[in-house]
Amino acid sequence: MPTKTEPKAEEVKELTPNDREYWEEKIPYKPFYDGEYYKDDIFVCVNGESRVIKRDIDEPVMLERKFVQAIKNAEEQQRAARRYRLAHINNEA
View 1 (tube, rainbow, N blue to C red):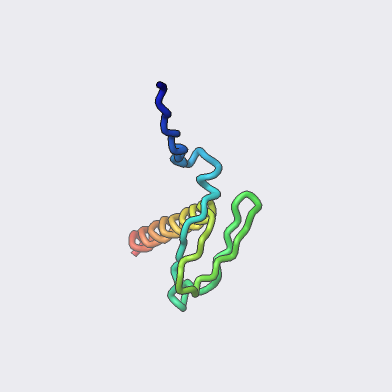
View 2 (view 1 turned 120 degrees about the vertical axis):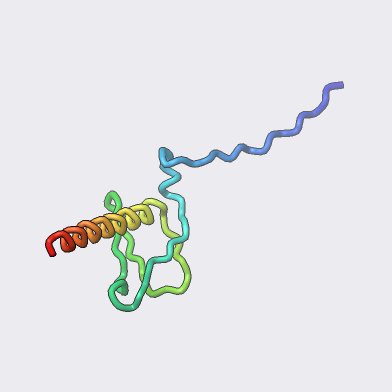
């Protein structure tokens, strides 16, 4: 008598940055807030879609990965510009 085979559980595909769903996935993001320099809301726009994120919140917000990545890229660019500026100020003195 033939035996029944167990149906396989649906395989969960691991998302990669090459998948559109990867960038649309919502992830938690908590913007830095110091009440002085970093106090204004963050406006971010990716391919015509935009979001405004409030800085003075207690809990992280759920935001699409593409917006979080754009914010992180902008922050890294600001840090690089600051390092460059400080290096040139120190060399001029």
